[in-house]
Length: 52
Image (cartoon, rainbow, N blue to C red; front, side, top):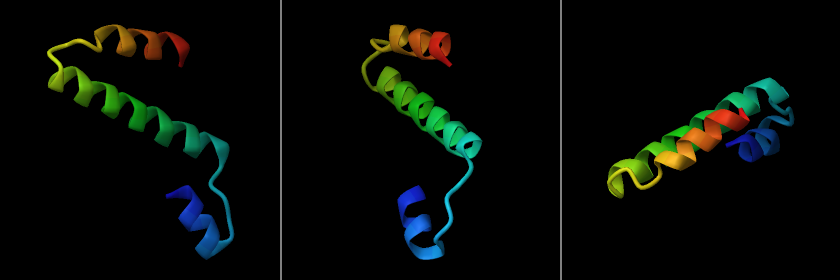
């Protein structure tokens, strides 16, 4: 999304906005993997929260 916005509008999002979007995407992906695989990725979510 960021790349397409920059190509069309020629302006980048601030770093803080990119970090928020990336954090949300990673959390959503880990959550979907946990649901799909019976909680197998519980440790991944813990590690993600440690490193934020």
